[in-house]
Length: 171
Figure 1 (spheres, rainbow, N blue to C red):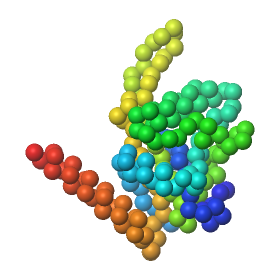
Figure 2: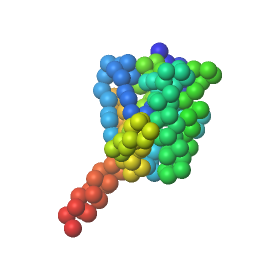
Figure 3: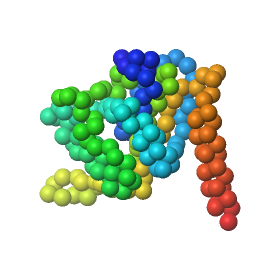
Figure 4: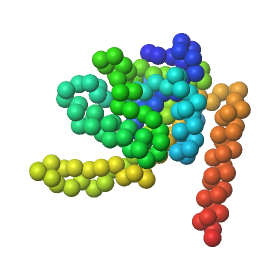
């Protein structure tokens, strides 16, 4: 299992899934962040970003899953200016399994989620596409006695967004 202490403060990125293997004993924070915050976090992490997958995207029987990853990568790049490519999930000739990642020692897990349109039938196949404005970004991180300044800043920004949303709804 890859542990934060061995590879520094890493931002792991996955699509859609999280598993219990990612969470050692302890307390965790789960929060959603804006697209701008996600873009900033990825850019700041640069060479400490590691993309992981719950699916073996290199397996010949996982072409549908590989296609979904590729579609979300293209959408992130073209619509949100978040530079994640399908190849970022490939390490040599394999993938790094999501189950091998443990969130501790400053590491974070960004889970990128989205929704799909209702399928349409084309040539006897059901085809659905990502709804572009359904993409959400989730951060999972450890919370211990020492709360970092970055964590405080992220929480303050989340509260501001929440207050702003309440104000808009009240109008």
